[in-house]
Length: 230
Picture 1: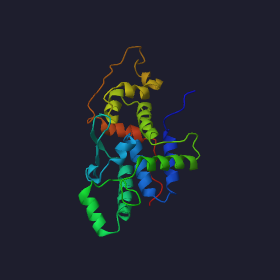
Picture 2: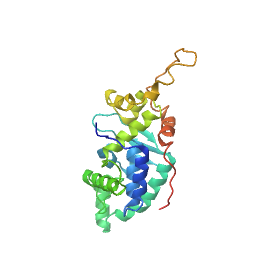
Picture 3: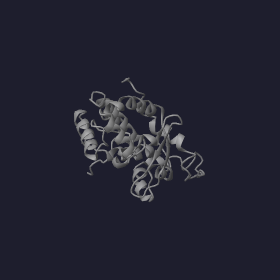
Picture 4: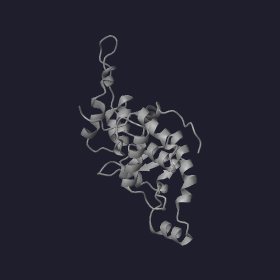
């Protein structure tokens, strides 16, 4: 039997609940939620800058790696709330020395997620956070950050989102990387034939912008609202 390489939505919610007890809860919950919702690779997640986030228009500039398509994603309400929680705490992660803080702002981008020392977080730090949290939450698998990206793809496929749209959303240039998510979803065939045995008209859209809102409704349908205020 092949080892599962993704997290289910209930497992993600379990991890988010477990992170509420973490010393860096606001940062880690926001980071994990965004990793799932936007299907980020860990390097893409850690490359986010404050300037990529527009809370007024509720949008996020997504820069894909591995020659993927970059685009703009909308921010869902729960996500906006988590980002606000984190930004309120983020100032405590900046260097205490005003000179160091000025140097950081002038010399390098304002990374959205910071380590306790005010530096950009490393891949190893994120791997450790998710692995330890999955162990504390007693999940049946040992989680890693890339499972969040796969979780996003499978969640969209399970909710009937078109393969081409998932491809655009995750930034895949080759649709073969996207088919893995829809191939195991037999439910996608249920509406091909109507009650009279006639084939329904199937339409495929490759334009991401006109479908993003519906995609988000599909993606977050099973994730309950926040239960706790930080």
